[in-house]
Image 1 (tube, protein in one colour):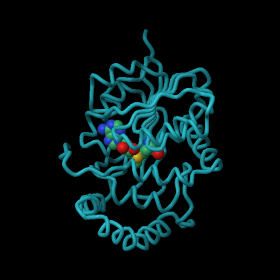
Image 2 (cartoon, protein in one colour; image 1 turned 120 degrees about the horizontal axis):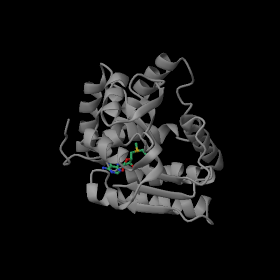
Image 3 (cartoon, rainbow, N blue to C red; image 1 turned 45 degrees about the vertical axis):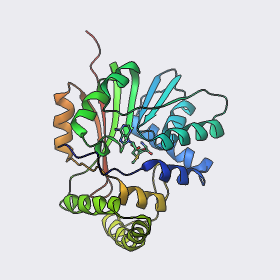
Length: 263
Ligand SMILES: C[S@@+](CC[C@H](N)C(=O)[O-])C[C@H]1O[C@@H](n2cnc3c(N)ncnc32)[C@H](O)[C@@H]1O
């Protein structure tokens, strides 16, 4: 499914605002979530590519877990700048590379080389061409390496959210703020019912308010069921190692797959 580039959420401003209140505790949560997703995979001395690095939080977490070469890319220049600033603040002695690159730009992606771990959490479904993004991203994993991604789950409400998200991006600032206020109770209630847990409790070092903006604004928006994702990953020749289903129906399912080692 291909979506027009004309309507596109600028994630960068939201990440810059998120970063102004970033704490060490959130970084610890990011590290824990990365460790949990990668299971037994040790990042010590490995190369790590973070596609759609957002705030740079997970590139920093990967370096703190011992990755030797860490590259973060994002299509949004504000995300790239924010990631650089966060890395300078939280990890001043370790050089991390951040570049403005779109995962859909095959030549620029190829120029990055290959990596032991390619991580792309909540990104490929926002590119406007998820299938191509999956293919180009997976090609950056070196033989024997890991591909760790998160993709929005398919749910009966997904087409409705797609319209809501598109509408958000067509509104002026005051309209967007109105949507955030209007939808917050809906999101809180839906999350509480679905998880039976405190709806304000966040994972991966995220915070509730910026997550609502990210959810309402995140467009282009695609989604896929676990079975659809498994089929796409297997068609790319990847061996699926772990699938972690989303905690909420419209959330992200996580997949960890390995590129077979060379014979
Ligand atoms: C929901 S955020 C996720 C950020 C980060 N991965 C995380 O988990 O916190 C999606 C990010 O993907 C970026 N993005 C969207 N389309 C992209 C593309 N074609 N190439 C690279 N990054 C892209 C956005 O700018 C945004 O920073």
